[in-house]
Amino acid sequence: MYKKYFEYFHDNKNIYLDSASTTQKPKVVLEAVQEYYTKYCANTHRSNFGNANRATTEFENARSTLKSFINAAHDEEIIFTKGVTESLNFIASSFVKDRFDTVIISSLEHHSNIVPWHMQGRSLHQGLEVVNCDENLSFDMEHFEQLLQENPNAFVSITHVSNAFGRINPVKNIIHIAHKYGVPVMIDGAQSLVHFNVDVQDLDVDFYALSSHKSYGPTGVGAMYIKKEHLKDVKAYQTGGATISDVSYDRSILLDSPFKFEAGTQNIAGVIGFAQALKFIQMLEYDRIIDYEAGIYEYMYEQLSEIEDIQLYTDSINCIGSLSFNVKGAMADDVGVLLDKMNVSIRYGHHCAQPIMKKLGLQGTARVSLGIYNDLHDIDMLIKNLKRALQILKG
Image (cartoon, rainbow, N blue to C red; front, side, top):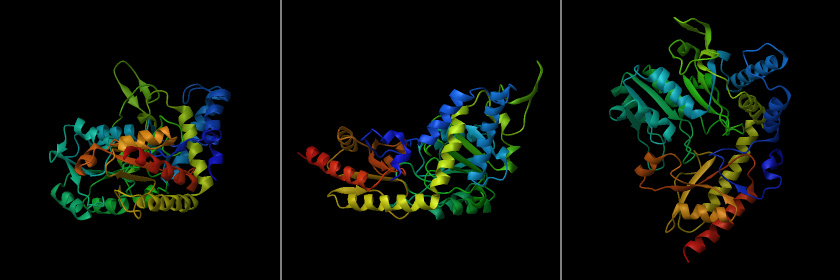
């Protein structure tokens, strides 16, 4: 019943089940982007003519919209970036590097929360520690606290929801325990905002990375929440136009946050579209989103469980959005390719999470991930065509 909001589905019979990679965009987001480019396209924070003032106003209104959406206390705590990957690199380079001896991550991180630490010369047990998970991919809280005790000068960077398996980490408890040891925490929220409410003050999180394109907004834009008390200690990630209050040949004086962190011309249309995506989610209401998606997820879990030789990698209780599976005797890639031929789009492979795949002895999985536009018919088509694919593969 939610497909009506998305033009992608109007004349498209594709069964789209890859929303963890990127979501489809509702019509209101497309209209907001088009309106900027066709009605008041101008740069922000520079010129003072009418459309330039409107562009600046809409851009800053988007910042206020995001601030309120995640219950941040101050506009300056919201810094727009290109997305979650840039946000994680931003904090890794501008706050963590040369400040902390150890970075603690979980077993379920995707590459964007692993590679930046390797680029700092950190590897396992050499400045990088990884929290164990059990056979059901649950976060090992006892091991986490042990790592905190063993590494007093640590920084924690943890995903809120695993992109590969949909497993939800208990981040509020993680943050509470880390703060007990005086350790700041960054949360990778790439897969969370689209499914449930994020309240940064309730979480008491220090840094939170947000994605637009995984939350019904445009690609190429995201944001980083930085708790105000840390702003003075975060260095400018890059500098240049729009970041300064005064420049001479001898020195540059930077503005305060958020402007000193947003060098160059931003993705203005993307930011405005991101704000519209947040308003779209507000219109739908999280309570209804959670109930609706939980029903679809549970149905999908039950249907997949009934197929012979299917192996699911998590339970259905502590997961949201994504479900990974394999079929005995079939490669995930072959399953995905055949489903694509049948007009069903899923993702297959390592899902940018090679370390956990290697830990589990897997080359990859088939992953089905949901958006608000999916319905029971989509799942029925998935199951029907998956059975056809398995018949082909097994001869």
